Image (cartoon, rainbow, N blue to C red):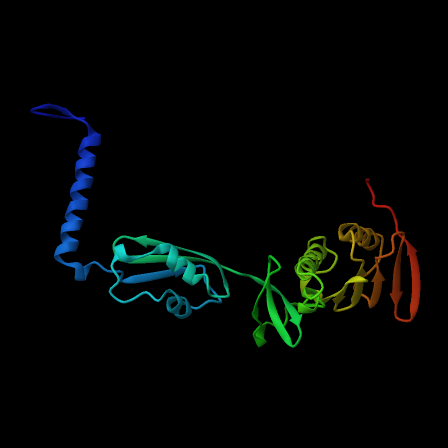
Amino acid sequence: MIRSAFGYVPWARILATGTFGALALGAVFALARPDLMMVEQVVFDGQSRATVAELRHLMDLRNGTAPWEVDADALARAVERHPWVRSATVELRWPSELRVSVDERQAVALLRDGDDLLYVDDLGVPFLRAAGGDLDLVHLTGMGSELDELHPDLAPRAIRDALWLAGTLDREGLVARDRVSEVVFSRTSGFLVLTDRARLAFGPADLPAQVERLSVLVHQGLSLEEPRYVDLAPASVAIVRRLDTDIVLPTPAPQGG
């Protein structure tokens, strides 16, 4: 508190008076010189595949826009119309700067849909026709619009399962993701994972159990660095085919439970 001729004055009152005075001064300045109160700078962060020019075009922010004319939510929704943008927020930093924070999609696979290749994000959502320089991503086949004709939930489920399968094989140290070239889906037989050396067949049901069985086999000596076809769909055996030789291996029980 500050002592005056009239007694003590609370700090809160002093601060409130100062804040009100600053706002009043700003209002007077805005009324006197409105030409000087405008958005002068738009700063973007988080974008990579979406260019600043593309995002500025979508925002359609007129030159000379005053800060009180800014609709941050509407501008964010405009930015989100860009196919690479998953979500966006717009913040006005008074009086002259807009900051646009972008959360971009991450392309993790390519979906073969008829004659088109579409980017698929990490949530399993196809969102844009792929460019020629990104063809080294995992290709997903048999999961396009042909499944939509059977049931609208079938293709999204197959895509999510395929991404889970490729990601789990990588995380478990069984097959590095950059070695997986394609995952093929069939409604009757399940998934076929194509790597640079091996072909791994998984039935459509209980994928975690099949990955666990593959992990046990690998830890007991099965090499996926050699040309092999491994069928994990049968419940009690794993069928391993190397070159022209067929070998049927009993499925060992996982250790420790």
